[in-house]
Length: 258
Image (cartoon, rainbow, N blue to C red):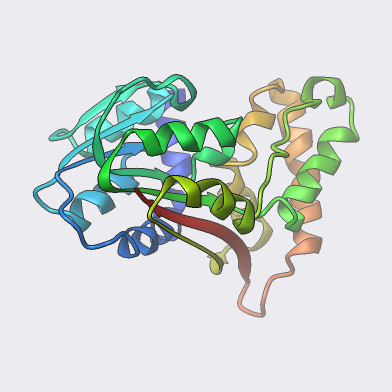
């Protein structure tokens, strides 16, 4: 029998290559300085940690995530590294770190102004904070998710579940430049080819954006909710002739060096 732990990790990693490509692009932009101690905050099932270790061999690497499910998967994947269950918002490790990696996680953490400042303080001189966040709240997949959540018998359960906090590149640059020697900010739109049409798009978001919504619903409601979402997705993302959907996915990248 598959546990909820296995489901969460396996669901997220159904599209491992697509989800790991952005963190490789992020790490490639980290300045080529000596990195002795690095930490992957919000490490998930360890795919980003694995990319970090491959990019910086010989570095002391650790990881943390608020989800015991993901930490269990990370420990199985990379038993040679230390992984801990911890919440980024209350993480009190003093550092100093030569690299703090935050891949596709800080969009879930509130209060970015004090949060980013506190992360920079944990950096050693010359150390870098490397961040990648989905920047897709205006995409049809998220807009439809919010609309369906607000228009159904589950509306009272799902009120406030949607992720609405969003800042642009200029906001992060303005926040970090007084604290850092160098700040590099850019935005990339990936176009992921997903075989399987609308069903594949739904499976993708079941590993991320859909999770907090589905967590509030009972089994019957989940079935109805997913059916409505799948039908809406099929209209918003028409398949190509071979059945593939090309899923646009914008992401914001930040490398801030102290």
